Length: 406
Ligand SMILES: [Zn+2]
Figure 1 (spheres, rainbow, N blue to C red):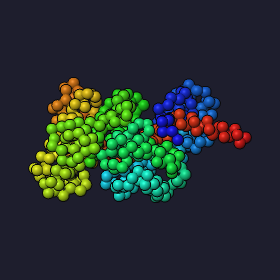
Figure 2: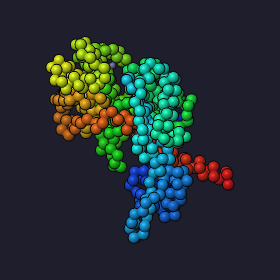
Figure 3: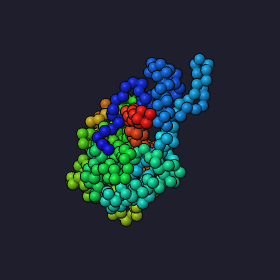
Figure 4: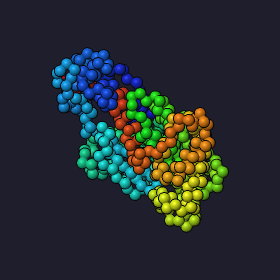
């Protein structure tokens, strides 16, 4: 299977089977007559398109609503149970998995102990076994798996899915994750940087999303970011766009970093660095919520560490905002919930960036940082698995097969 072939990036003919499915999926047309009007197609052509989608099992026609002519029209909708997709997030502390149907509804999710130091081949085998268990737990047939998306805390080369310089899980460096999954399955496997997934979860779902212009910042154990311009994710030439956390700052470093630069932001102000500084002072810090709880306690030594880290992050972020001029900055990751840290980032950002870049800038936190990565992964995956070009291809293959058997 070629990872270089991303169906979602391919254009299709207006009103093709896949294009009709896109319309039904977006709920912008839910009857045959509205599809016909949208594309200027004859009712018989629309009938052929809908029949093809029904033969693929992708749309269901049910319910009735009043059509304009007073006749009863039936509603078309995505046959949600026709397939299932899985989001996988291997993290430092946890391995998270979530399964959703084709409408994007999450059916079940699990949080398991982290893969720790498992090298990629073993790790992928473990993940694959967990995917099977997830289907069992959700009570849906495993043979309807349509795709897997893996979110990793590292830059990921696009579209090959090769992992570049991970902050942890060092044995994953250079691993081509989709190729490792190919030993187990031939469904599409997408691999994406974790901060990019947070950005995707925040992208506007409106058809007219060209004005969507933002920077999503992941504040977790590490610091990452995803850029969205004109409603599109910007990955950069090698997939490393948004890696602003390796910018050298005043310091001092309290942890080592893979980038090997002296006092990069990540080694000074990331969640791992904050935890290290708190531990040095004798605080017991194990999970991100410990940092958040300590910040809430109002302990001045803790507050000063959080404010210093926030100021360092805000300073580097300000130069990114000046350069990129986003409409919004969205803070994600567990530490976006730390009020003193977020307040310090915001204060420094507005103080340091240009008035023209700051005047309309909105700084907010993602609604649910714990599930943002999974939501982004499932959305990315469904856009690929149900891409109009892929549906057209499935319809073409189905037609050929029925012609051969006839
Ligand atoms: Zn670094």
